[in-house]
Image 1: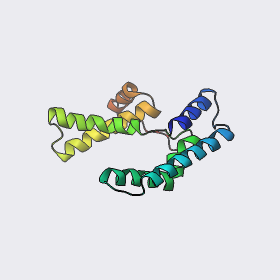
Image 2: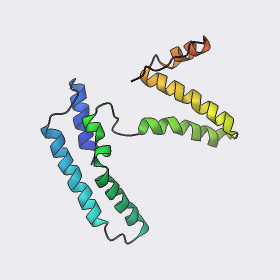
Image 3: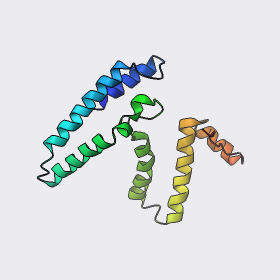
Image 4: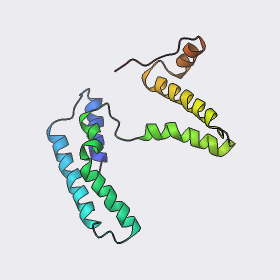
Length: 145
């Protein structure tokens, strides 16, 4: 359901636009809305635990439409949360595989370092340069928006 708007956003950004054409998003919103309403009506009976979850999702998609479709009007917003999930995954993996981070202090320090490096990779000089600046006592600090 959200793949078509994502495709429109990718096409618009690849062509150097900062917004999609006015007709394209409107048509996509109508499709989104009809899919959400169909999902809500098909799961309205809430006959089982899975159907209750599906109905709750359909209601959230309906009630928070602007949040779910923000990436179509604000190209700075990512269409998914994969980057955030990737940032968390390494902590959980390290905890699972090596049994590390048993103490809360170590987990907080690891999280702070990972957050710094992730932000530097996404918005700044890159991981290596950020580490060099950090070891020289001049940490990279992101510009205020």
